[in-house]
Length: 400
Image 1 (tube, rainbow, N blue to C red):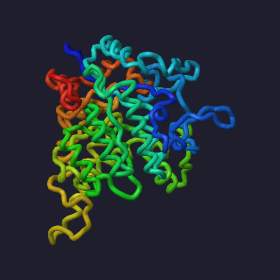
Image 2 (image 1 turned 90 degrees about the horizontal axis):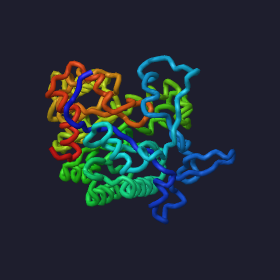
Image 3 (image 1 turned 60 degrees about the vertical axis):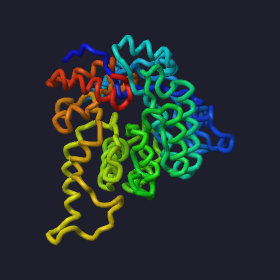
Image 4 (image 1 turned 120 degrees about the vertical axis):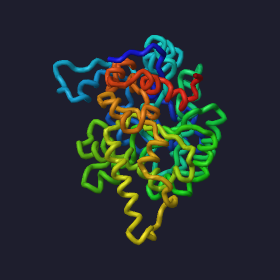
């Protein structure tokens, strides 16, 4: 296990949200369509959007597994039913209070962390049939973040602001508002907008402002919206929660498929040709898929040409000005899964674009953030400095 002699910056920490994370600041006009906790007819508490139960993240978490408890299973070991995981309160101070979290950073030797939602990654896609209310709930969630965490508390807890692109006008308005409140990162859901590419020139007012603000865009694993489209298309039940997903649903709708499609959309629809200053962070989406995707995109881009020259085909966003693989290496920063080789990822995209992320305190992450170093064998001191601190410092606006 390599060691470091500097405080690290972790690009994947999480908080656990309280029941009022969307209702505390929901505008009165949308109160009946707020994302809220309701007790159903069986006396079970569940998350709902209006009267509709949410799909993937259906039940509030009052108890959560300890950090790292699920790691061995995720890495391929057999689950032992005789040794069930330990549970602790989700509202434990380290998970729900920013001053307590600062003490955790000091304990673990971390300079700063990016604080990503847990439940907040799971509700926007379920609101797709009411884009106006979806945007209102996202706004309310952001205001809760501002209350409880702040966007850059003490310059050490960097919390992304979430933006819904279901409605362009409200997306631009919310982007302007959170920028004024000090947001350093904006987070988008990886997945479709159900009829329009997020890289379509229709959204240029949003992307233009993101580039002008020089603010990175976070794409974190979450509920993509694939279940009711892709899952249903293959005969799967699209209305399942996280404990009911089949292996096929996980493979097609929750794992690497949504992030791969979203990356391909941004690149092949020429978003970076129009906005070359954009930077995107792929966090908790893994990295093993990258070599294959880059090769496939390069091959797909060549299909637009023949022995007769450029084909006359409709191109959303216009023609590419560089190879897809080069565009990925210029614009994307990637945090690998803990069980993946960091040195392999460095070889694919360069150490300047690899991020340290522990997923703490989620049970599928590491028990202690710097356990991430277990997978950093083979990196030079300079490469470790980039991966464990400097890349995230530049993206998150942390002082040198």
